[in-house]
Length: 136
Image 1 (tube, rainbow, N blue to C red):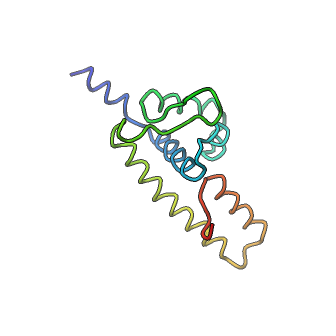
Image 2: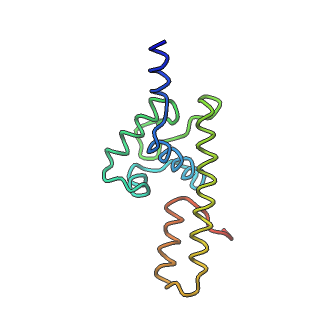
Image 3: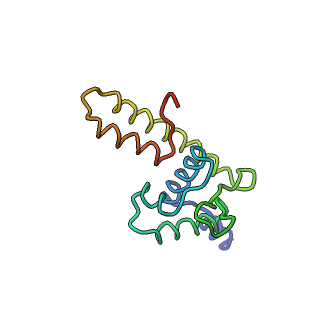
């Protein structure tokens, strides 16, 4: 009994790991390739690439993602049929969050009083997050 509790605890995903998994899912959907560690670091406001590596390694060990080789863009999501249902739940949450985020950014960009420089920053934010702007 003790061992099964430990194993289920190890398989759980922390909040930070859920955020990372959601970002990876959204990034891959938007770009058709995995994010680099530096892109993850910037997008999730981590202070170092080693923090990304720790979380990526943990998600790999838990079976949610895999890296096919040592290249920078080899991160891929393990299909839900190969993992627990939790991955698809995180994917649904990520979709909902990204849709909300896109709507909020697009509403700001529609503000005629917003300087062009700020609109360009918001547009670049959408690109970094892998979110398509309406009309694309």
